[in-house]
Image (spheres, rainbow, N blue to C red):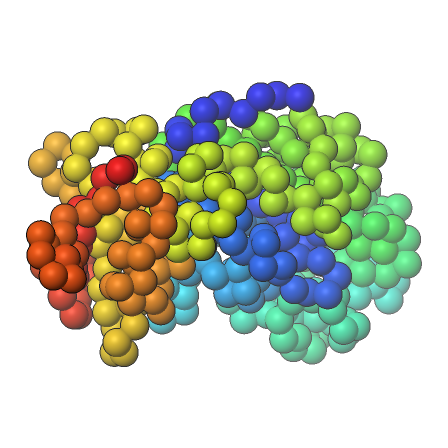
Length: 382
């Protein structure tokens, strides 16, 4: 087992979705969401890496509460930036396309009657036959086969009995072919995988290779597990997947991803009895103090309601305030809630000397957001 580097270093943690974060009931356990929020509050980059289409990725990201950050979907064919400020909620940074015609033509020759789906990025799928419930993420549009032969695609899905037997024949066309059981093949551009997309994201984020972690359970995760400095297979993963990993955690029924996530969270934030907001403040402040000791503040702002629309910890670096980490539990709370959580986490802040000793919030310098004024409160460990 590889020992993880110091948790205070900025990590990229790549997470498969189905079978890793979400079970067969299509629900995300609250323990998993809380662990993900703690990882984000610790300043790490949570990157979803999935075989799902873009539509399926966005649906999962909403369940998890991710509205910002990077993701790879369609088995690495699409590199995406989640952006809550964009009308669509995302921006496609790169689409690795290939000519679908030769693949569709060969597949229908080898398996007459095969179900063919070509991803329509951001909408759903164009299909020659309707796929059964739960097989594709997003809507389907019946399309004549000759139209599926034309143009380029980011991903083609093939479904029929034992279609995986023809994987090698399709690979001879120069494309990437990934089986998912005996009856399913995903086809993407040459040299495309979750690992290739994640390496692009790692470089864009400036994360050191030794600070990469990946967790997955499927055959399409094997390259990703090998790419990461710390590759973790879920306990229920097939033997080939577990053999490719550095270590194995519990299965999906036991929330096996949670202990891996928590291993990247500083110990003060894992103290029993802390509220989610208190734990996240402790995580953000502790990591900030370890990485770049100096002044730090919790910064909040309101939306159209009295509750907070956002909460972040910022640090002063080279004379300017830089965001250290989001504090997801601060959203929909109040400034008083933040004060109470800070005290609970063993943090101190400037207060009056008499009477109710109110916290000394100050108006923050306006950041990139347009809208209501921001307020900030300096924090230190007691």
